[in-house]
Length: 249
Image (tube, rainbow, N blue to C red):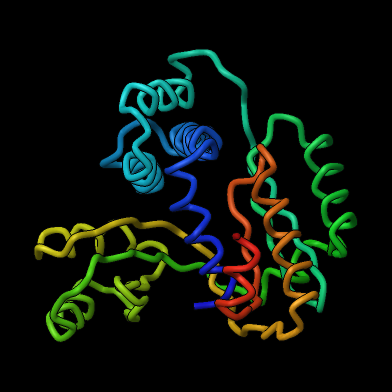
């Protein structure tokens, strides 16, 4: 896993235990709302909504709260109208960064994201100049320990691409359109699915070995993630566990 992936996983798990939980809830609810607006409120006919609904439930967002978000998305309830806007840029050391947002005020969000890039030693880039360095994938986290041969067999049968050992658990990679089907297949085979999401996977990873520079990269990504409109931050860097632990401490 890249350093950013380890950072993001730690942030996600930490968010369920402290005050960041409310921020996680707000971001997930916004994603559910947009998915419902773009594809309708029927999960069986809207794979994106189904994925976001599951992700919200995995984060312990109350069902009533999720259902209200769906109704706002379909127009049954009033609410702000959010639109997706993606920003591309570079961080310290030439690290590629992609920031996905949902906003009800594009001008405000654009100004604030550009400011964060500049403030933390990065720079905004033209659309398309960074995105080509990443591939859209589905990623499913499966609880271990387990029989790897059985998992491999099910992964190949279900249409997934691969799986990797992530320490205590396993990460199954899928084509984006196969995420829901592979998750169902793993669930049906008795594997414990902890999470599933669409993500951007870097084609190549930059190793940031200088501790000071690594911390600058982490501060940039962390600041982006804390922004209310930001839903996802992707970057192609790798840092040591020691630097990551020191930064989180």
